[in-house]
Length: 417
Image 1 (cartoon, one colour):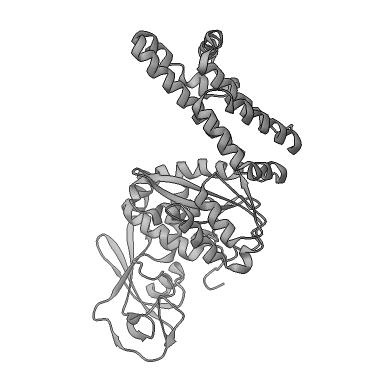
Image 2 (cartoon, rainbow, N blue to C red; image 1 turned 90 degrees about the vertical axis):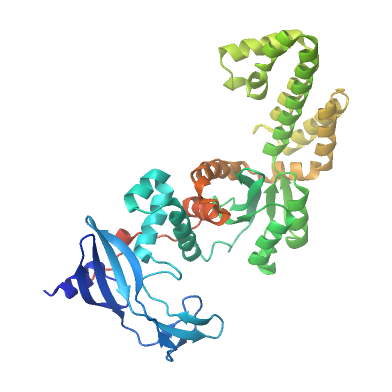
């Protein structure tokens, strides 16, 4: 068998024929020629038989390594005049537009990025982390399930911090599919408006429920675009507001103690986690500290009791009518507590009461979305070195999004079969 025929079967590159194989000291160079005569634009569906010219230098792509050798594919490509993109180099069937890696390599990197840490993937594939980021962006662009926005009935909207200095990603999840179906850089009404623009008026009209935190921007966007949707304010965030109010009271009390008795203030500062954690999660020392706080009483204990009362309201064993009655009772008690953070919390809950009760009544909340967010935060930590929101979002979508991803070794095509 000729070496060109052997490499043609070995590489199985679609739409090309192998013309020459060169063995260099550190790599194998395979020169190929495209089978088709028509030229295709790499960025759109335009095709033409007219050639503008031929590139004076060969184009190169890195393919999967051949043992210890680096494998490089080369080809002389033509240029065409696209009505949309102007004079541009023709597309090749084995690589994505703008890439210097074959699709096989990029699919492999996309999979490894969801399974391995930064150091391991860079050493295994022998590329840097910035290159990994650019590759997974291209894989996501072509691998997203085109039907991911079809049949959305119940969705969750939330933002997640992905870098310092208040940089956020807005993510939309499908409660039924338990997948992140859309995301973009930034947060607020304008970001969610982009999602509804992508979704379209007809599909937006099919959404029945949207869970979110108490962000006015997201609610405004939903009311404008998904007019039939019920806004459900997530009970998780209601309890989180209660925990935040408790921490505010604790810090105020600590400041007072620090001015009066610095030694006692240092001991009290260590009581933070026994107040903020759930009682069932306390260790022995924290439980003992909590008992001492209870005996001492005062504003901190009243705030703790209010926080626990609010958390108990949203337990799974209460029906919507009981939740409504207990929520009203909590607001009355918090308003009379004399604790300013809880007075503010009571006003906030009354303002969003209908949305909170809708979440309880419909059983729609951000618990699943928060579960996804925990995974998102782990992914974001791995994506920190990308310095690009697009790359971070690509890694999120590749890991927990609706990706139609096929690895090279999973493809069913057998050359010559």
